[in-house]
Amino acid sequence: MTALLLTDARLAGRPAVPVDVLLDDGRVVAVAPAGARGRPAVVAAERVDLGGRTVVPGLWDAHTHLTQWALVRHRLDVSWATSAAHAADLVRDRLDRAAAPTGGQPLVGYGFRWATWPDEPTAALLDVVAGDVPVVLLSGDLHSAWVSTAGLRFLGLGDHPTGLLREEEWMAASPRIVTLDDGVADALVADAARAAAARGVVGVVDFEVEDNLTAWRRRVAGGWDGLRVRAGVWEQHLDAVLDAGLRDGDPLVAGTDLVRQGPLKVISDGSLNTLTAYCFDAYHGHAGPGAHGILNSPTDHLAPLMARAAAGGLRCAIHAIGDRANALALDAFEASGARGSVEHAQLVRRDDVARFAALGVTASVQPEHAMDDRDVAEELWPGRTERAFPLAELRAAGVCLTLGSDAPVAPLDPWVAISSAVTRSRDGREPWHPEQRIDARTALEASVDGRSLALRAGAPADLAVLGADPLAPGADLRAMPVAGTLVAGRWTHHAL
Image (cartoon, rainbow, N blue to C red):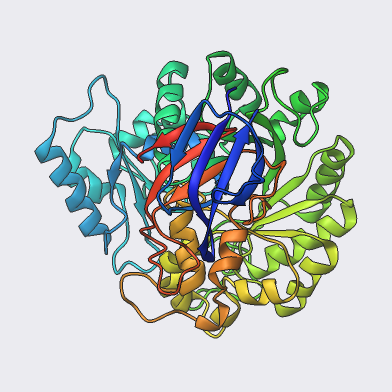
């Protein structure tokens, strides 16, 4: 690979010091004052004048479901529905404006959040607007689906008392929706990767609920040249990864390092909007056996599973949203000796914040979820929201933070996550629990996979070229302009 010299760049937070950045063989070779006489005497085949733009390490999204995000980008958006009737109207409008899917395929939508709606989502309500057209609407958190009667038949479920499928009931039926022809899926994923690169993204952790070892080896064989990927593994596919001798960070295919083995992913509880996040206290206004949520993976199963993965050289990524689920996930880390992360950590007891730090467990968080969930959290977790999405407390305790999106639950755009982490606000609303904000530098550092914002020599030449300094006072983080993205010194997005 030929060398590339980026001239007249700025580093984040240092606008007055222009630098030249030399890249070669996929690495940062040197960062020197612009035009410095001591600059390494390397003749670059390509020289790009950045005109004072800011260069930062390329951004990572630490939690995605990449195939689902690729699909959602082409599906009906019902995320803004304020009631079941409103969502049904959106389905009606879509069918009025465009032909229904052919071949008996369903109309699939995404993004509804029903926990605080004034009316119930039922199959009968969708039947009125869709008739014999199968309709399957995926919830914003992916933990439930709302299905018409024809949609239930498509899923092979027949009669259902409500048409609202939650947790395991939905997970068992979801392959009929999420499974695509390999060629179609791979093309959509490649397109989604290009869109992510346009936002400065150089890598993702992919927790797609499938055989990721097979899927990503296929994509590499097909010439994958997009983002870096850490491919997570689910329990049902763990044997294949361990039998292949793959440890955390190993390339899935010899000779290429773009796609590497990621952690074991386990879902220990549900979600807030589906009323299944596992909590010490009952959801407000709810009683009975399910009023505290659902524990999907009890500790006596989770800890041995994590110990097995750890013995095979894998890290563990444990989904935990409710405070009781977080406490139990930390118990499992302590019992198993595994290393890794709790994914989400949305409601955490203060004693458990300290345990995160003591155990060295990373809090892999999605700040945009706080903006999506602030109202439902106040309704269902009253008196507890001062410890919901506790980014500042986790940071102050010395916990390692990584930011992500959980795409398609939130957009695969790290600047959205960074903005929410820094402002705790969206759409002009007052900040929600502003005491849990973190500063822009901390949020950016939690989004660049541990790289130094100073662009140290020897680091991978994975960079984002920005049209503004994200550490400047008043920077519009959510709309951060991205002029270019490089992976291993190769342009994956170029708009200079």
